[in-house]
Figure 1 (cartoon, rainbow over the protein chains, first blue to last red):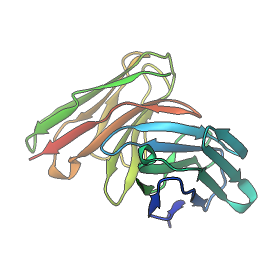
Figure 2 (figure 1 turned 90 degrees about the vertical axis):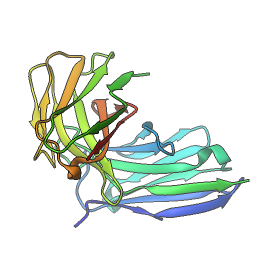
Figure 3 (figure 1 turned 180 degrees about the vertical axis):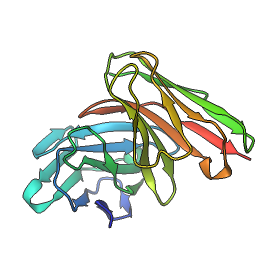
Length: 110
Length: 109
């Protein structure tokens, strides 16, 4: 089965609302990253977060290894947050061979 | 920030033809990766490298070869392109944090 599952698959928000994106994994974890992908564009790393909580501006990532989940919280969403959010994990190979989730497609409307 | 560039950005190829996708990184990362992204499959690892002269098979290597002639350059080679290889290809470098290139859109007719 799939090692990395993201939810929801898609989400529409009004500008200013908060969002919680989930990433659940079925294997042990060596490394975990969250990426943002611009529509039709490349991937930008948001967080490297194999455990614990990290903050960057309006974004917060929390990874709980024993629960096999990671979340990405977006506060006070803006239209420029629209795009796809991907989580990826290295399932304990130690070789940084990341396995990607299918992503959450976010649309923020004014 | 890490700089990863890819060429060409767009490519149309014919079935059975040879295609070479190039990737260059200027941040002296040892590890480099080639992924493809398809609707319904997300990003999948094709080949990767730990340094100049090394190439390793990823999760979907069939139909692809890779070459790492230097620390900076990593190429993906399709010896006999097929329509099923129509996709968007991304190169990345780094290890725990990976930095991605802008992508190459390949259409095989």
